Picture 1: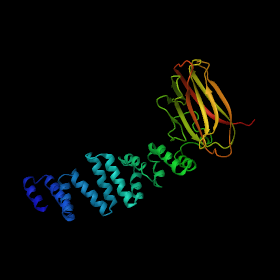
Picture 2: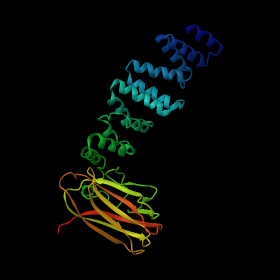
Picture 3: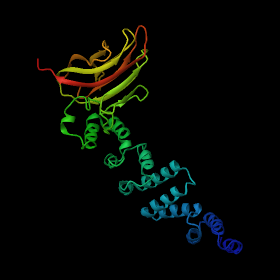
Picture 4: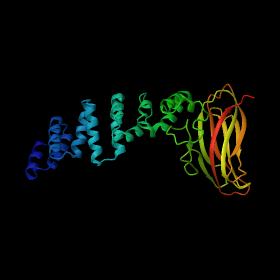
Length: 323
């Protein structure tokens, strides 16, 4: 490898190619000292040398110099010569093998330019690492995915507690209302404890409210949320307005116990007036057992003579029934 480097360097003394070629030969010979020398020579002539950066990344891993591993990973990402997903998976593999997750999370706390890619891959790991939930405060776009994983692995109670740590900007009275954000404001709080909405059929309005467009066929999904109302008697109340033809289709709220799927209430929104706000109410009882969390879902309802409808759902709320 040394002879090759010398001969090629005579042909192209200012180029990194002779040293990259020698680096490849030294790698096959498992000559660590030569590899180090040729990688340094390649980088000195061309800081974008892919072969040298890959070697330095591997050498840093073997030395357990994880700060250097991250540095070379960043340089490789800047080169854009390798698939970013594969390269990020490789970096995560280094920390998985070493079981040094706190070092990786510390790096991600600084929100590097490639941080979102790494976080997205971490959310696919077979085992969720304890520090990941806290890290999601810096990467809100991944919060919903994390919460769904937490629900699967640790249950709704733990996931709900995690969710509340993400919504500190909101006042306490918002958390005491069921469902959360019942006026459909554009809060950044993640689902499933805030609204998950079908973007094909509905959109949040600038001043609140959910605009819904339906064809009058089938029972298409529109919106959903999970919340934790205490046991007791309630009135499910919703306000809406818009144009809806008679027997052309409608909307329907369905409320169930989340874990048992026990139906608690169903409210059909069938508008009669074109411009007036109309109110729909249904009484319900949240049982004291096996119903710590409830799911409310808005769906379309097929009409006998399907017609397109455009509705603005202004609010939905559970009101304690004191009668």
